Length: 262
Image (cartoon, rainbow, N blue to C red; front, side, top):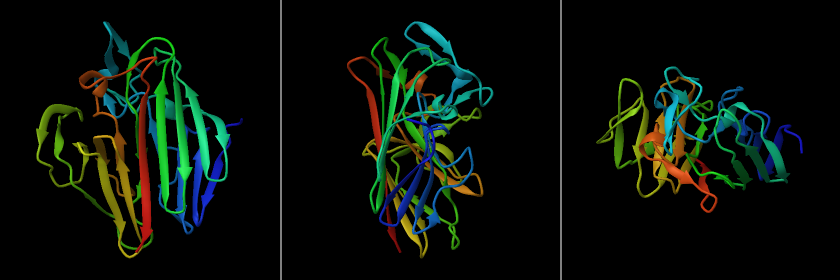
């Protein structure tokens, strides 16, 4: 199937999926109101096979040091798949399934599958990475850009992490855990019971981001948008907390955004 944009609908919710633009969700409209920042780099893009920054673009793969392109010098950021077209495997009225074959510069073959499923009051994104050959470390995450303002008051964010990863001058976690500090943030937080964060546009809409994953990055240093990014490990996690994808054990993750009008 082609990589043309896909429109999903359920009730008054409408989602645009963009296989040709990194497999991202390009838009989420509730009653005609767009919740995601618009633009080629925005929407909500999948972060695979790593999330956030890798220190100097290098990670240990077994006994070998791998070098990724430095797309955020001096680091490599947000994986490789957001820069390439995905394949549409299946699509219907309210669900789309996309796939992507990992290729160079990633050193191992692997298949990424993303399912985008819409209901009248929720959007669920499910992603997996599987391999049929050599095992490799990987991460999964999503990077949504929620509009800070929907035409009324600015959004507020409520979440209760167990800790905040101390951020070094190089924007990477130092390994120290801190009591959560007030924003603005470009920081990683630990939520051992699973990610739960509530965005509220007063008098308009409440949206709850949940995931069984234990890590979330919050980025709200830009005026236009607030990012709440569930992921399977912290930034630089290929080095500090690697999760091995093997032929017997794929890596899987899910996040759900559920909304209600206020």
